[in-house]
Image 1 (cartoon, one colour):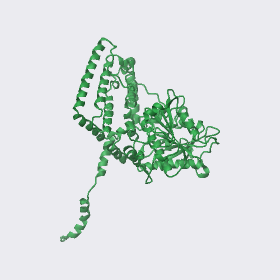
Image 2 (cartoon, rainbow, N blue to C red):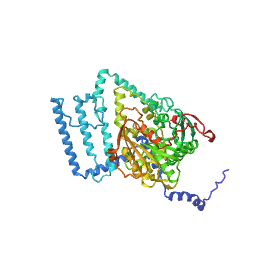
Image 3 (cartoon, rainbow, N blue to C red):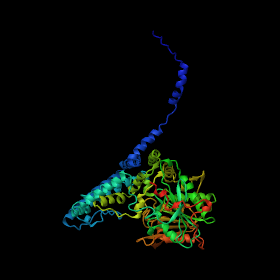
Length: 600
């Protein structure tokens, strides 16, 4: 017998109560920013962190202003016709005589066409056509009246890099050196090059990264004897063993950049700055930074100051109480050290004897070609990628540095290894350069925005513990080194520390680049440097005028720095200190170079 179906009545008020939260949620303004960040992060994985908007906005700015500049258009049109006429004239004379004068010449630093084989026809004509185009685009991308200077510099840079792709030196059938080698070896060079390509591809695909290039960390590089005496979540602190019977009383604490491993300052024994200092009778401490992972995404820039520089100073001070410290920072480590020193000066902390900055910027208003990759759009794009990953990856970071020197770091290497079949001879500096590190999301974001974009440190807006600091407060002597061909920390930008300090300052300008200029051991051929001292009451001198006036010395700047450190120290030498301070809990944990340097 069928049971009657019970009908449930619906209470309108109950339904309204249940629907109220949903209606409230729908009516409340919604934010889908996370969706935007995920979309940008996904795009960034395909572009290696390079913002398409940042590039396109520069080209649009250039094109829009050029379209309204008929005078510049006429000038470029006449330049194009003039270049074509010179090329035609050169081509006709070259058919008659191989001594015709070349109408276009490469930049002095451009070594792509140095081989005498480029002086033969038709390769000489290929070279001249390329150089003519290069010259035209150089003039075409000059700043147009009304353009943003930053966009003008970016367009000029990008045009040069795009054009470099089509250089005849990059194509084996247009490159006489490759053609001659292939003919002479019957193509064996191409087979070797293909093997090299496969090896490199497999290294990248398996993430094995042949970073060592035959150099073993702790044996061939980073081999100066010492002990790790302190470790926290961010650093290992190494104290190096003494190499002399007596030492300078004041120790040296070195703060390297965390964008790379610390041992650029402790390479092979014959040009290790650490070993040189130890053998000169200095007690040396070195910070070795931990290689962060996604778990370190929220590590802040100031954490590197507190858990890095300040804790290292505390440990050194505990081991050698009553002795002041010579602090030295390299690259980004020097920027951090300058912030720490200014904070210490503000707070009345007098534990530093001197500050040395090696290729380190304190002002970022003119940071060079690296700034071409940094603007609000680019930083936001990069932030979203790091927000998604938790860090800036090594490949994404190295891509920027490779773009700055693409001819030397990419195209020349590709021609040599893949077309000529010659493996570049490995050295310790190359091994270090391949041993890269990551950077935490929050730290790098704060660094890019606070220093690169907003230049807070020298604008009087950089706060530590809610109080603004000033480099002007640093009263201890400073020794600052810039390098002539530095593409990361241009020497004129490094020189600007003169504007924001009033202490005794010794400035050195050495030849070489960002790394090779610092790794400049005594006996290195071709080394020279300028040196001059700024006393506290001296008037400011521009960078170029300083260079004209400064005395020039042949050889390495290392002995000059070591002598300066000795002058800033007590006259009497003392017995070498013990390793660590066991009675205070600082015992040797493991031999140098420690564990953090091996992290991948």
